[in-house]
Length: 163
Image (cartoon, rainbow, N blue to C red; front, side, top):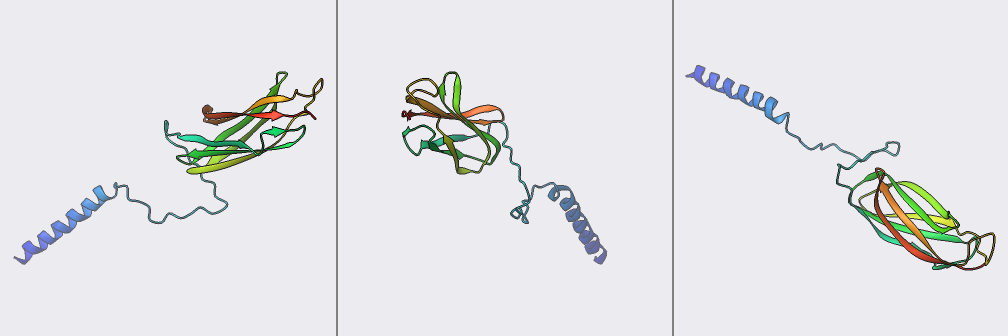
């Protein structure tokens, strides 16, 4: 009888050991020891194909009318569903005489939720004649690219006043 108990116990221990090796080792257990990266570490996030989900919540300027060579503060608020690296935010506008007088781009990393991007641009020289651009309404536009594809865009009008 003792031999039968010993053999049964040995069989059960062997069975559980093999079960742990075969089944439990392949189970995707969560890593309980994750910690925040240090300042020197760079984290790279790439969503799976078709998972890019972002939108422009706000595209605003500090004023509606500007004079020549005036600083224009532009705020762009982008909502993102996930972390996105290498997102290109392009600001283009005040096109006159075949030239965009505002043409700036930023490569940013978006976090999940709201992300604010600020641009400070100098308005061009505005006259009623030759050298600069004419007074009047001009469009400025923001375009957001990820992986070389246009994901979102928005535009607004501003007014340029003579010098």
